[in-house]
Length: 234
Image (tube, rainbow, N blue to C red; front, side, top):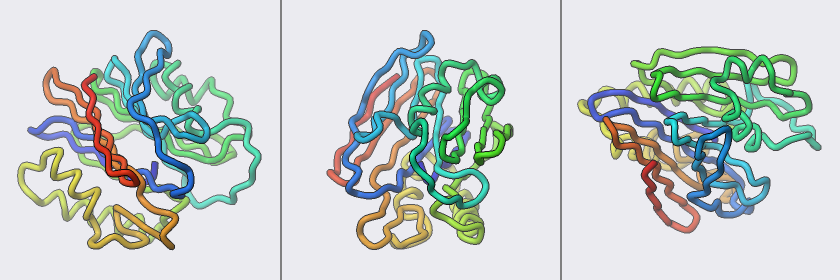
């Protein structure tokens, strides 16, 4: 839920996400399936709140959650609803535009929600900052990177974008190359690298990747705390 990349090239569409979390939160279960609005939704399930930070549907829609909106906010629990459950709720809408208009955001902690619609080839984003939701679209043919504003300040976010652009200079990037970026981007693991670690208890606990090429659509989840890797085909 804290670093997200997207590329679309000859190797297909590749979406990769690092979850940076407190190690005591536990190990997520994968794959978990849930029927939402006529779609089978597959995701790694958070062991505490039961939600998720990344989910894909049988209609090739992918939702990814990052903590925070535009800047670091003050954590003020209790909140009405977990953001991971908000992500699952978003599948009840055909896109994030009606979700932004109709959803009840009140007393939910700030977040960024990114929607990749692989069938319609579009990317859209909603950010909730505790005041009003904002809506943005992105070019489907361009690479993109997102970083959580709760963990990374503007300077660090810009630095991570620079690492990403430098990584993109390699020819013929494929899903394994993007996994390598999410493991090793920014150099050795430290507090702000793509695979991060701070004070031994806050770290990247998993890396997940969705890959679509022609009629093949796969979802891989690598749990770093117990070193398990599971791939399912959607």
